[in-house]
Image (cartoon, rainbow, N blue to C red; front, top):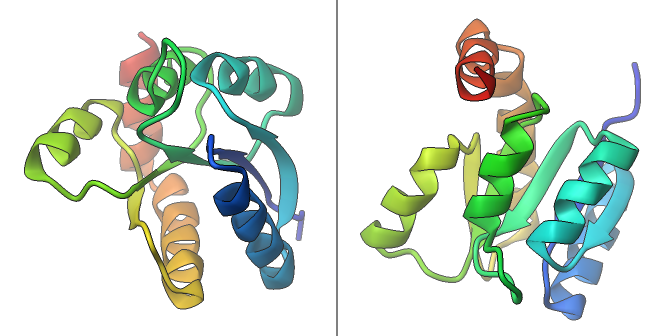
Length: 137
């Protein structure tokens, strides 16, 4: 089976490195790390990750929701949103990008593993593929 490569989009370096180490321990590939929404869009074009873990609140002009929406216009890739804000307002705003999962900071290793496995299962579903086609249309 092909190693699944995961792109991390997180502007807090310590959090990004922690996630990277956990991904490698779990046997996943590391596709790269972006700190801004703009960089994430460029990296997706270059590395074509199998999954993106994207912080909702990024420094710069573009937040994670905007970056995810832009990425999904051109690529079918599942996105897990990472956030320290669990408010209903944030989750409602994030839902426009149709994430396959959410990860609340701080999180346990087991939560990270579960949300990734769940995301890959959802990404195989016909409903996800149809949603991705609808977004890119």
